[in-house]
Image (cartoon, rainbow, N blue to C red):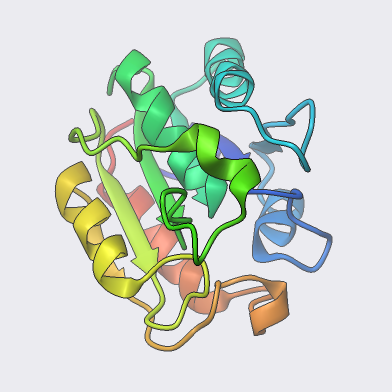
Length: 185
């Protein structure tokens, strides 16, 4: 599959992804990409976030590929119970937030706990950092294993966002392109 063959839905995490974040840059450069906009980026509610994802998927005119970061990854995992590979062909999941870890994530994300651990109904890649302040690496590995994701160790990359030096993130673009190439149209 090529990017032009899919509706690429960008699913940011808490507080949205700013203009220098790799998700925003990808959205600007991929003609079929659009952001799943949440009603409140700063006080997230699981039911509302999942509803927005499901609405965006329902409105898509082509097969969907999800590109999620941080809390967006967990929202996608919650939405997955209502999805199938028929509409969603794949997901690129980056730096999941461990919403159950009270030492790593703020209380306002607790409505997203527990993290669903059922296999995702579509192919996925999960990229995680060894020093992500919002998710212990072993926990991210557990998510990837449970979801059936191809797990990619990003080394010591922080939260894989603009603040940790990942603006354009060309390495991520290459992994995403390889994932797309393996998906059917």
